Image 1 (tube, helix red, strand yellow):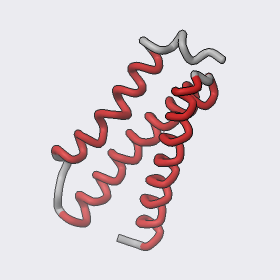
Image 2 (image 1 turned 90 degrees about the vertical axis):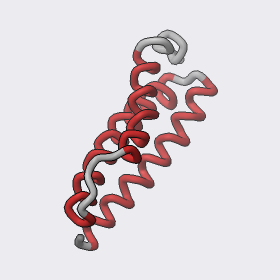
Image 3 (image 1 turned 60 degrees about the vertical axis):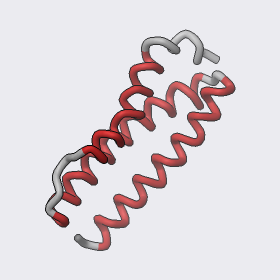
Length: 93
C-alpha cells in the first residue's frame, strides 16, 4: 500500500469524524444545514469510505468484507434512513 493511499484513507476518516461531530450538534439544535445536509453528507461519505477501505485492505491483507465492515455500515445507513424519513420535518430551520 502506498503512502498516498494511506493518507487518503486517514483523511477520509478524519473528515467523516468531523462531519459526524458537527451533524450531531445540528441534530440537537434541529438545524437544517448542520443536521440534515451534513448528516446526509456524513452518511454517504462514510459508506463510500467503508467500502473503499475494505476493498483496499482486502488486497493488502487478504481479508474480505466481514462483520467489522458490516458494523461500520449500520450507523450511516440508519442515519440516512431516519434523516430522510422520520425526522425530515424536524430539521427544517
